[in-house]
Length: 92
Image (cartoon, rainbow, N blue to C red):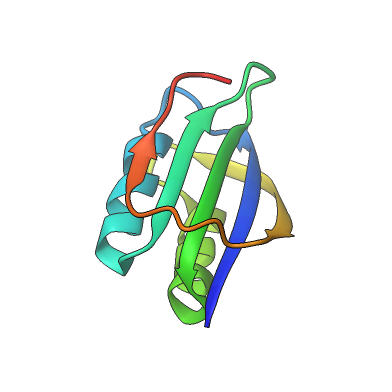
């Protein structure tokens, strides 16, 4: 079953390679969507794909890359929109 979730990750998550880490995990898990830095210091990611793959990506986002310190992850369920690739977007 295809699901979509929007994540807002807080903590030390900018300037530590979090977007590239997220893209690597997403490509490995075969999910689509995007990741971007937010102006308020968080990272936003929309992940869409098989429910189990999305859950594995979520687990990775909760730890982040080596230099990150994830303090909070807010998760919102969304309707799947049919993303067909994974992108790193400009700050939004």
